Amino acid sequence: MIVSSHNLENTPSVEEIGNLAATIQASGADVVKIVTTALDITDCARLFQVLVHSQVPMIGIAMGEKGFMSRVLCAKFGGFLTFGSIEGAPGQPSITELLDLYNFRHIGVATKVHGVIGKPISHSKSPHLYNAAFKSVGFDGVYLPLLVDNVSDFLNTCSSPDFVGYSYTIPHKLDGLRCCDEVDPIAKAIGAISCMIKRPNDGKLIGYNVDYLGAIAAIEEQLKDSISGSRSPLYGKLFVVMGAGGAGKALAYGGKEKGARIVVANRTYAKAKELASKVGGKTIPLSELEKFHPEEGMILANATSVGMKPNIDDTPIPKVALKHYSLVFDAVYTPKLTRLLRESQEAGAAIVYGTEMFINQAFVQFERFTKLPAPKQLMRDVLARNT
Ligand code: NAP
Figure 1 (cartoon, protein in one colour):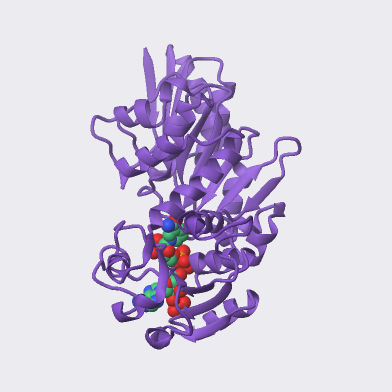
Figure 2 (cartoon, rainbow, N blue to C red; figure 1 turned 180 degrees about the vertical axis):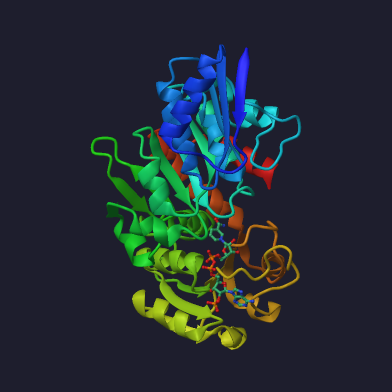
């Protein structure tokens, strides 16, 4: 007999949930079921604490999008069962997602927890990518969308040693950096992290920015036939970066690391100036880029959000200017073939898709999470199926 309690308001304290569980058990229940409402993702941790210490079979779940983690991780903390909907509902995985996306039947006490921290986060394709990759190499880990309001609260509350690795996305890349015990020098210079790992020997949180590795690796790959020797193919090239936000900084620092000469163009000129001064580069107003062609064979990177869905007819630079570039990269990856990339191709430039930046940084993160080589083709296939 399952005896249940539903709290549609909030998630009470551990003590209150424990007392409720005892009352339910005293009623003669074989299984105690307590369902609460998550007002914050950290509410899930209180349910996990009660589940772990329960002496009777117990179902403990928090409703709402912020309680999503409890529906998947109850398996790790000894929950008796979880619920999956037929078609999926806000905050509730479907049965297919539980079994095929989150590998629910393989989640156990020792499973390592990873996830992408952002707000909003339900649109993220990362869980598809990492869970499939974990499964394919037999890694005992799960990767969740983590709808976090306050990064510091989340990290302090969900501090079990098995919560080991996170990706960071908008708007938490800066807050993530502030919560690190140690930060990689490039991430510090960029002022944002995209990845955080809990170091196994001392539990310290180490922050990295792997966005730049992803973007630069994709560009280098496309240019690699054009050089000989061990230097980066970006070395000495004039590298024009449009945009001075998170992606712009990652590209400008990455290009500088490889010895490129950096020019930053941004709608807000002051931001372009600030970034250019940090990477020892030059600045140009975005509106003047059309007439800018000091030399042929330059590299162009779009790190603005211009051209992103739904504004797919927009482009950050007129087509006529593109003939001076040998390669054009677009960080925008929805759609995959942006107007900028289509016009660059027509102007004779090689192009690099934004999806390449995304997949390359995912390879790096996977290897940091698992210490195993990334199953690259499988991850490419999963991304292609989900974009
Ligand atoms: P961000 O920090 O918010 O920066 C946005 C940038 O776009 C700023 O430079 C902003 O200029 C510029 N911008 C926005 N609207 C503009 C407009 N109408 N005209 C001209 N410039 C405009 O965002 P972000 O994180 O850098 O992301 C930028 C783009 O890169 C997004 O499309 C994002 O999806 C993409 N991205 C892709 C990857 C990947 O893996 N492929 C990774 C990260 C980001 P102001 O400074 O003047 O506002």
